[in-house]
Length: 586
Image (cartoon, rainbow, N blue to C red; front, side, top):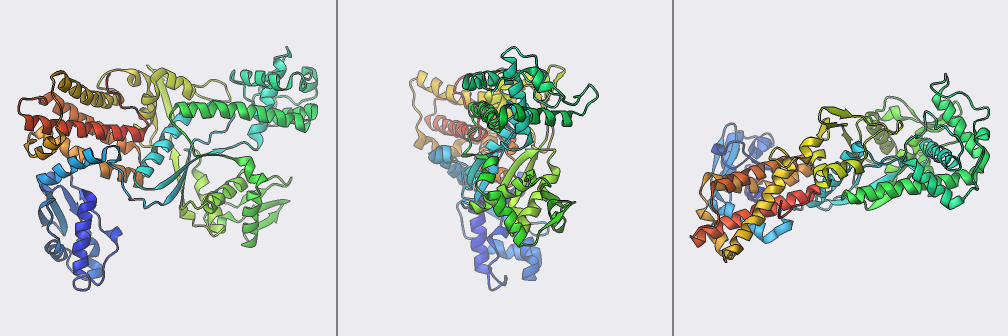
């Protein structure tokens, strides 16, 4: 509906180009929005106010000329100029009937559009370090990223979903040393996991897998492991110094090849767990991209060479620095340390250059709220390599606080005490997980109420929406039980009989769906689909409680059934975008 009105406006502006208007304006300036008050019409546009300056015309005068040039349309009952130059559109009942017909015709494709024009977008999300199971905060990243990708795809963008595996660097060495100590433990050795290691029980099965693969080849006496190590916390030592000493000792005792074997088995086990957890959650990626591959493929060297050629690198104190301050960052950044090791930042800019080289026009990173400084750094790197810095968008996901009753559940991977995503899904189910993670904008903190998520009441929003869909299915069962059939053609031909306030409210809500999807895509706001579905479920339940659908009058009966089935289709389409099921019975 929105797009059809915009096309009418473009036709009117084309007539005025070269007369009242100096030229045909860009189509991006022409937009219509749904009015908040139906007394001012169904849709409105401020296009006259936007074009008045370039046209050197009074906005109201220009609006009147645009209205006069509008082609006749069966969708529009009347137009009026209001205020300083707004154009209000009042739609015909036939316009609503046409849209209900489109819902039946398009089915699961209803709400999809060509807004994105096939623009290639890469959405990188979750990308949790493979050092342990996913916890509930990662679940919010997964739900947001997966739903955003679905919404963008529905709006006509060409979307690629990617998980960046942080499988290089110090945290992987810490993981491997923790697994190796657990491996020694399987032989009865008395070990203590470092304060800065990973003490969780989840590493014991990984240690068992390592033992299956290598037998006792990597077994060493605990006395040899700990001999001469500096003190750890809380025994007066420095936990950073201590963990580095443990890693060095492990490399010394089992050799570089043995330590690499521990890394491989550890990463394999962690990634298997993460991948299966996400797949069970309905989150699937087009590619799992290894950070280590940036080094082996030469991508980091290519990025650094490009920066060198642009004169953006310099040497100081034995390290190589990037002139990030020249591009708005707060300080310059080290890309190669004094020991010759590449920094995480070098990997980050190489990875984003690689994304651009793969042809992605828009790069969306979904990261934790503690990554504020990341945006300026990576944009600086892109700009220095002559890539558009604004091609990068970063969605910062705020924290999740999990409650069971009045008890707040604590999370901390290093402490080994945290609630995993798998545990949460087992308790409340995938549907409630996906839905509740999207109850708030990603920019807001989220309190996840376990008791509400598992309740079967109208206060539980996912239950309320799914129940609306189940009620639609129940109507068809009632129809069949009475030996009747739905006549779609007859129903669509008699939609003018749907005149009650509840029917009109439901129809108006249904028609908001396509524009809701588009706005959710443009604003990177999948939670708006949740808000919409709550409104739609409310309108449907209100109608369901107010009217009988299976009445004697066949024309009225089929018209009401056409509306009910259209509501079921749109609920189903919206839930599909969210990754939530649409049950037919509850």
